Length: 338
Ligand code: TXA
Ligand code: MG
Image (cartoon, rainbow, N blue to C red):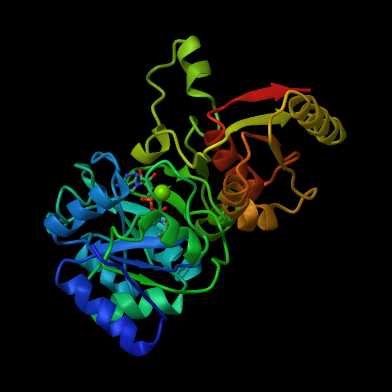
């Protein structure tokens, strides 16, 4: 398939919206990461997204809307919490998991009774959704398992020849995917951490918001403890993810020791003839780390390193925890402690 890579002019956005209406695939920028969009209500179009990404079909998609009121197309009842969260965080990097209407095809939801909904804070994304007049299902615009794309060149690298249109945009402001919050049950639970943290959500709704207890824990550790029942509640969180081509190792511990150990291991491995990339972030600069994380992984791959040694973030807050979530998955929980 020939992919059109287009400047985000109004004319081109309208053209892309037509492609969505006709059941085609359009990659587009959002404030978090680039998305790969299709008509969320068209089973055939959604199946094409799974194929283009090489994504397991039990992993549900997030449905993107352009106006808060459009959530009514996807779910019936809006609880006071949902209304509150919409008022406080939309448009923005918060996905809410709500009970789904039957009009949302099962393929879009990965067979679940719920659906993820998000109103992105990006003009190009919102115009695309608005002109298509449809809710748009959009996972991150990467090949399944690869680092999420935060720059248009990352999207081109993964999806050129596999989608109809790639809309160009700026580098993504946030850099990690949206916070996924389950609001379909009694407890508000974060299934995927992001820029919007439990503390911020709690302040808005005035009640407890918990993290999925499986987050940032090595699945092998859970198994060893005989806790197989602890399965991540977001299906996407159980897959190997965000992985660079190189082998990756995380050094965890007290900050100064971490940096020293990263550099020691680098020298050691270079001595063995390996090309080694290093991933270290500024102390306490978690928003910056989120912004840079996936781009740095891809850059290291381009440099052709055999191995990436990363320093774990220390004294993390909610955003730092979200970055560590990505780092741990990228490295397949390959950690040394100092
Ligand atoms: O920031 C984002 O959310 C980006 C941009 C493009 O909007 N999209 C994104 O989509 O990250 P994706 O498909 O890569 O990740 C969606 C995550 C997966 O972990 C999936 O399992 C979870 O959300 N998810 C979606 N619908 C769900 C549902 N009904 N129940 C539980 N988890 C759900
Ligand atoms: Mg993804």
